[in-house]
Image (cartoon, rainbow, N blue to C red; front, side, top):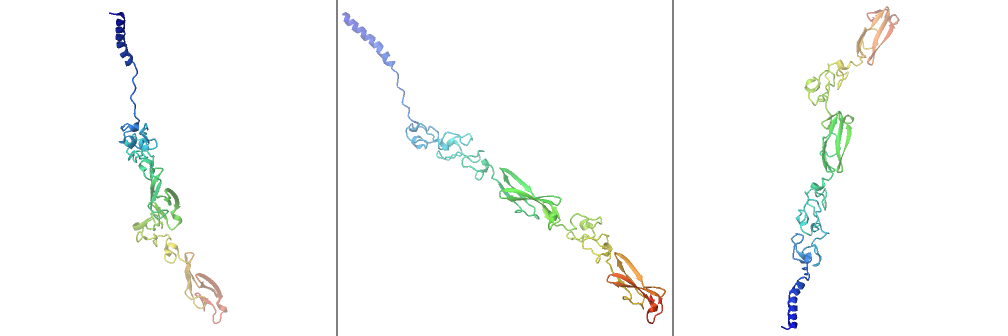
Length: 318
């Protein structure tokens, strides 16, 4: 065979072996990746695809998330472990508040007013007796700094601690129940207790209240005194109970005054002491006792100097 022909055949054979390997060594071109907003895939898992998703501003947008919308920004905004449309606080991918009242996180549009479960109770105060009302027992209750409270009006001796509301806050004041129309503090209110129900031995006879004290006709009796118990108190006076309060000053004269010709006697009480004095003679001199109001007085008269009398006998001039 011709040498030229042989050389040509050899070249063709070599080319057949080398060319495919050269062609196969050429780098392959990567497939084209479509933008997230044009790939027909729900990339953010909110149930909406491509331009139907509010996170897509155009088909060239590479993310279906919208950083300006809480329920479509891919972030757990309210810290409850759920994100975007999977969060119970999201009503749709366009909802801009991921908060969910009851999840323990106060955020978004939640306040103590519309979601106390998350944001705490607002400050509040209510008063069962309507304010500062000393003779009425009351209780203030409500919330302060999200903490509940309840305080009852209370007594310490005669001092009443009165709780009341000042706006949505509570306040208190103290009042001595004996400084007004009352005389005691009982069970958180100022009261007036009658002597026969106040637990005090008012008349000092060793007995207290109704029915133990004989001076008490009932618990509504306001005079524990009992005339004859030796203690002047309550409605007792010298006039209506002299045995307890002493006898008032008094004077009576049996001969009606200064009357020298009739024997007489003055008697009564002076500074609670009884007295009795008879007209009397000392020779011809008569000592005549008489009354001046409630007091007794005396005067002397020489019977021998009077007309038609010469001497004094048995307390009179004769």
